[in-house]
Length: 564
Image (tube, rainbow, N blue to C red; front, side, top):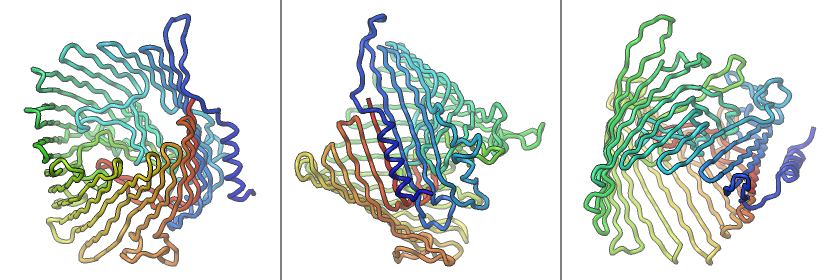
């Protein structure tokens, strides 16, 4: 059996031999149509070698995977076509773990395994843009309002790429704009750890209309109907509603006296539970959302105010697990309501919560110094309890520009969660975010950025303390080269604030300190090569109130992107 080094070398050689030569995007004339055309082809090749990440689990260690993604785009005047072909191949077979989907079901050698599919269509779309209307068939993203009623999009930090596979149309007549869409949800996961994600195939249909009044105010209305598992293919359907309806109104004033702007939105939700027993009668459950955002700029001072009140605002689905155990069931959200907190904050409940945010920024005498301060106060329902918790998030900081393109920014925050009942989980978080870019010459620079969290938890008088963070020191020669060292740490498994390289948990070493390095080469923007080696910190990652747990990574990852 080949060693890890031999396997990595063979995979890199295969990438270089099989990849097409990079060239600029191709522009041409179609003489039989007398129309200009443009063709763009982008290939992405990702090879990963997974070593022992020392997270106490053996079934995510000791294997390799290779993912290929080919995107072809064709534009002929107003017509456009996009096709994304994908293939995933897994090598090796990690240990099996009780209660988890066996990884071997996704590996080469297993007949009919998802990882054995040499090539499959990831996303396909075609569209036509006219002066007053647009039409799109295939896979598309969609957002209504501020995401309270519908937001289906790609989230790279969460490793999600969900689209709606169907039809979407946009029409405008003077001050009126109308958008209509309908289709089945098509989920895919760029995160290879999840291996494959089955499609829930929920039906999503929506209509949105807006009009500008007196060139000052935009008013709009929207409605979305979610029909879960219409074809009866999802083995997780008993955990889902039968269908959900969302309807809302919105008002926006983009410019008020040239110093302020205002946005207001209200939504109503009705959800009919899925009957557990055939023929069972169920009753509608109701929810609502109220959201407001105002911005005022007066000279050197800017003020942002946000307020929200959500009750039962939850539109999520679960992907099938599969009768043969091929898939891990995953939870996907079709809405992304504003959280009023930093996007990387761990927000567990963004469905039953009320509160507001006030942020003040001050740039004295229009200098290169910016002062920031904000306060967020929330009242949230506790999961699994009839109680609630009070949440506040206070943060402040400074941003300084220097040496032309240089910038330094430091933010310090305090977040507290206090339950209103005895025995609940109390959380105290002190966090810091810092970044600095130091220009050396016009094209050369040094950068440092990172975060540090110090967390204290107490549940039934049982304390639990930890620190976690990640810092990146980098050098850039724009646009050709970038190199960085990445240092991460996480003492959550040990429940202590003293950082060790390894912590002992039941006789097993658990890594708490992580060190990695990366090198990126950008060759005339037609070929980008990135190599990452070492260990990367895992853990909970939250984006816009949607959270996912990622395992730590140890090994080597090589990305090759070619465009021609």
